Image 1 (cartoon, chains in turn purple, brown):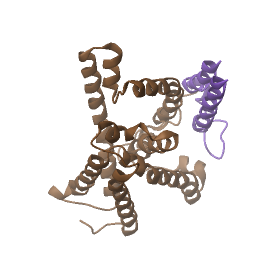
Image 2 (cartoon, chains in turn cyan, orange; image 1 turned 180 degrees about the vertical axis):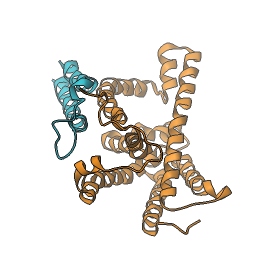
Image 3 (tube, chains in turn green, orange; image 1 turned 180 degrees about the horizontal axis):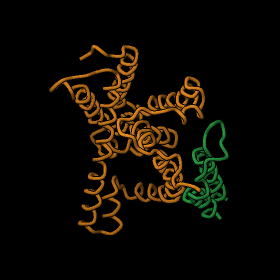
Image 4 (cartoon, chains in turn red, green; image 1 turned 90 degrees about the vertical axis):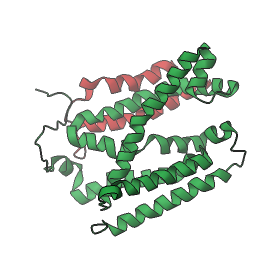
Length: 56
Length: 242
């Protein structure tokens, strides 16, 4: 379970066709850029989740 | 040489360089121990704990590579420069799984470097040498990048030297850096990291608040025409979409 959770942000980051798009533009930032920036806190949260699971 | 010097920027630079250098030399007295012992000099006696390590990593991972090289790559070739983001996202889960175990093994057996670990694990002198040599070689371009980045910063301050003076500021800066690292070991970058991390946060806030405010939002920035000597395509996306 821990490994599956850690795998999620990695798969999303490597799946380039998923986010290789201009719309939806948010605050003037194309999807391509804000999706990758949004992955950073998501990645941090998945590591936190994996850590919590690992301790139980 | 100093005719076009930006006085304010230079004052800020000199202030922080002075502060960081003073901290670097003072760091030798921090968590006082015998710095003649290689564990104390090179690993801070393995006593840094979570918070100091967090600051140290923050200060060491985010360097001229992050604040000069990557933005320059994005500026030059567009979306391809964003490789840096997926790279970080993939590397952190991997480090989370492997590094605590590596730390525990190295702490138990008293290993200092990757070479020590390889020798202990595989008992092969040649492999140890190969890993150690690769580590030093692989660090060289990264050090070069830091030096080029520092030189760009000094040029951006408005300093323009001729002949021997061209590389004088960076030589002085590097000698000071080498001296306090020699004196304080890992304690120097660890103590400096607190200042460096604060500066990185100021830089990030400036990048996401002040710059869009001054230039009229992120949308306006991405549409701004850029003066280029050689016209070159700078795609916003990785692949052209139809």
